[in-house]
Length: 160
Image 1 (cartoon, helix red, strand yellow):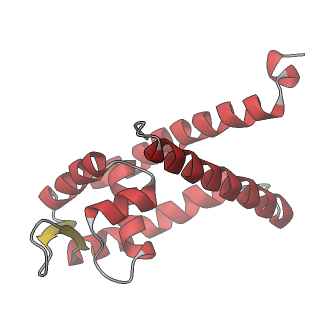
Image 2: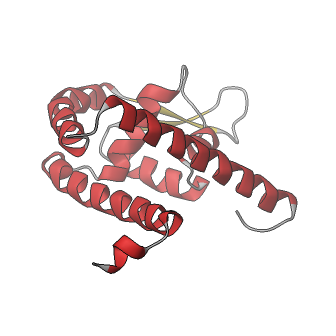
Image 3: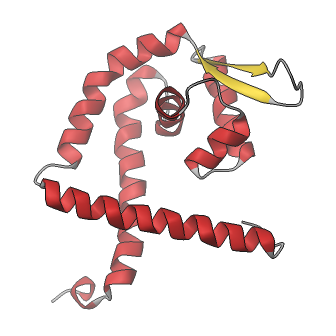
């Protein structure tokens, strides 16, 4: 028996989430290479297109994606250089920057849509509805726990 078979479930899930994230990033990055976009850049456009009613601030996007303001700004600047989004100063508060997708991004979404669907289908191959529902519940609890951990660290003055 290999060592993983003896590993406690928590350790296995923790390590597996990290490995799955890394491998998804690598494979998706390869699939997106032809479009001159990284998986992180693509994911930012997906979040912008699906999670907000109006153009969000960098801070709102960072919170939604579980990332830092600096990381989101760096990715957004690259996407702006490629013409997929614009960084726009808020009309009411010039200190605030909002992210808006462009028509170029709509074109990109159309041509990558099929690749994304195939990637997702292959990734979830053989996973039935009950397993998917259970995985969703576990991941939602993990995300909630992470949010609570961040809040506690912010309250105590630690870096989140």
